[in-house]
Image (cartoon, rainbow, N blue to C red):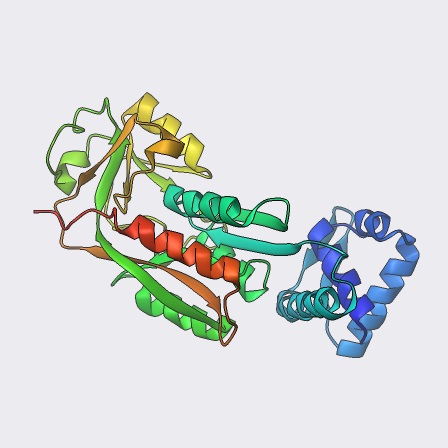
Length: 306
């Protein structure tokens, strides 16, 4: 098994098509297919299922590609550090659940180190994807939350994926809604008072178990619920439908504007915001800076309701 074979397999997975991957790699499609089949034969595994609609990744393939990405990333760092330091910029990437404060911390880090000197990437995405990105070293760290409901399940996955969770701050639960919402002016809101209004939730795709939900109290029997994929859509739904979601209570007005408010929920539930990283892998200088800005955001977290 060679590094080239691993790079070819990862490119096929990223493209979802042998033809597109061959075009990106500047080789012929038969040559690429032959190389991948040789790799599968050597491993004794089927990495991809082929069909007229393209390729899909098998479970064995997902596991192999996770390790392959790590090796390719480590080789890239070795090459950049010891062979050709001018080849490309140092890359810094994070993955996060849908938190505006995590985006703001990223902006602060980018401004601190300079866009001219580094290649930056941020992925605001689903819970399982956050974990998978850090597992496969697509991102240096990931931002998500734990609470009494999801802690055991996610901690088990962290262990299986070779990840470690570092808590940043605890916060109570707030109701995030439009400033024009009928409940926006209240000092606190009881969960029963929210029943007439649509609850907004982030879609989690194939990993839609309750403990992957980005919103606390995900098992509550809401009368109305709407799922969406991105934060901008949720904000529009809040305004247009008097909808709401549950959040940490950290408001980032310089990014989202002043049209939204966070009102404490009358609940004893708490959430711990933290970050995950690969076990026994030290954070880069940029990672340390990013974590510092996240901690600053935690100083704005709301006090417990009541």
